[in-house]
Figure (cartoon, rainbow, N blue to C red):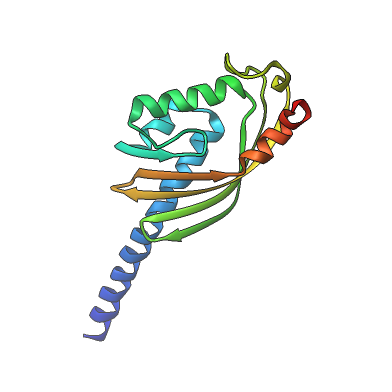
Length: 158
């Protein structure tokens, strides 16, 4: 009887650990795709109705087409964009990731001031991800916009 109870409790512990850790696996796959600039894999990691919030825009961006556009634009404007995770906090179906993004604004979008072209930048981000059914259901990104503007020369012009 004791061995059956131990076996059952061991199996339950394995299931609990696997379930608790699953969101981290989703996030690790997400950052692997980000590092490779693999937009198709990035988008496939989001739920169809996923909402992404960022200081870069007002409100939420929702759905695969919009997420595809966002990352395609990021990689076109900053082809050397890189990511470095410094901390991951797993809180059940939510995961908090602290990371740095670095790159050179090589191909600024049409309405970007010319003086920003060629500027290198590094931004420290904090993102909160909600994971449901092994997909990113929501993402909230936070970073210091003033730090970005300082690094790309905005305050030198004004």
